[in-house]
Image (cartoon, rainbow, N blue to C red; front, side, top):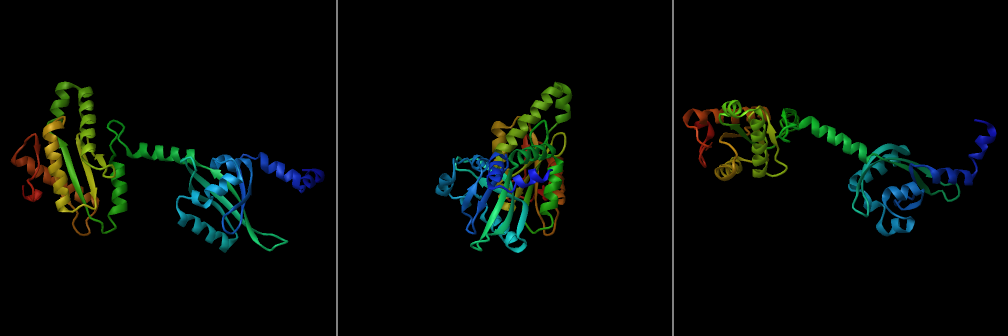
Length: 294
């Protein structure tokens, strides 16, 4: 770069023109977080027309988690800058953004006041793609249920703690014979219908996991014996009306210090114990009955 070209970048008009035409969202704020100036890309990113719109809405109010903003400012106060700090922003039109914020503390020569120069990089699409890929890695492609990998992830998160949970283990009766008689296409359709039936019986935050060809697990976080029995009874009643095929059901509730995998295994064993005694369209232990004693 020639000295003449370099000197041109010291010209305020040249710098303002450069900033105005950059695609990156650049801003200046005061210590209270009020935006003092910004380039067009910044206003476009936040879905506002200019400073007046931004002041009316409140830039700080766009930060979804205020504690993240406080943590970011603490880092800037300590180190003088922060790089690629991830924030979620809620635009006035309701659109959610995920951005990386890079910010530097600058002391003005005349007033001595500290202001902050920053750049926002929009990574919303990247985060959405990452989430889609993550979902693909933990979802069964046929049924849309979670898969064993998700169960292993849950095990790693839950088992070290003292949270209570219950597990339901569901096995479609005679599925191999059904598959052999009617064909794999009908078998796949049955698995899909069964998955939808199970998902309707529990809340969205209670994962239905396909752990085998015709085996499913439902994890009821925070549930104790009475709650697990209630869900099992509700499923039994619903099965009499809308279950696509007969199935067997077992359950277990976490014992102190037990891993999620161990609870799932006990639920499976309880199901097998039920099958030895009787096989019905939907066989579950009665209310208040110990599944292991069935």
